[in-house]
Figure (tube, rainbow over the protein chains, first blue to last red):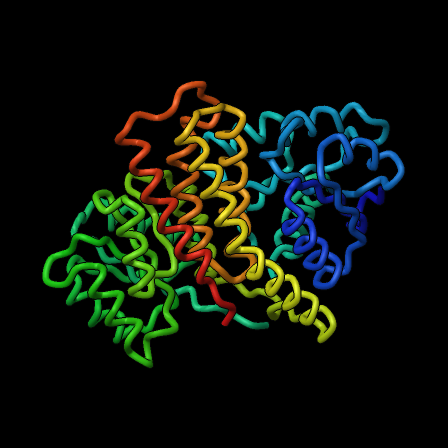
Length: 133
Length: 246
């Protein structure tokens, strides 16, 4: 992972429509390289080989939900400091606090605009790199 | 640099709420104008031409439904987004009515400020320079259009699937089936607007909230709750089954 440039994004969502749309939005609009996974388990398996700069993670998934996936990713080599951003419809104050306390770098509301998703991800990324400087 | 409209008109006869929202939004870079009845609100909208109107439903002189209808039927105002606030008309039926009048979104009172700001942010931009709007290459636009067509084609099937799950639950309640139903409704809520069907997202979100207390329950909801779910599902089915791409 490059400390300054956002290039590789791992998208994790059990809904194929979301994966397809996010892949198009991030790759075609944002110019990122995107890997899409349908489950937390798949994401954990892919993270080591893909080495994402940022993970975009659905909060509500069967079998392993977003929070459990985040915790599992943190245990993977080189994933400890990779920003994880939740894709979620629950954006109330209590939900935001829950995500933050779990270690999320930010959250993006669902449903998202395909033309705005790349910018929303970049806004979170830039706020993180700015705070590191 | 392109700049979006940061002007918002808020209409509510509850003055303390108006003042609170005006303070919060102004601090965040929005230009906020307010009115306390529907008629004054319409005149204000015609005068300042906001990008977004946030209106209560129960208003003196002109209610929120009529105000929305007047906005959407005026060729010079029709492009203004309208969010309806309501504490009484919370049922899906009234939200569906609101959509028929042209409302873009709803928010229920009481609401958390962050939820309100998130809604506002979808329809208005605070007053700061921003890069020109992202555009898609022709190939990417074709890809997006293909995804939208696919989503629209699958909507009736998804609506039918949801209805079948519910009918099965009415016959015999099973927590795992309730969970499957909830997941499908949740996914629809989180995707509809992304593919150009905001009404599907809004209706699915309401149904999701009705289903949430029961999705892991080993007992079915009581008759009154079941009736509300049934009605909400019927409206969602009707809208999803007839959704057409513009």
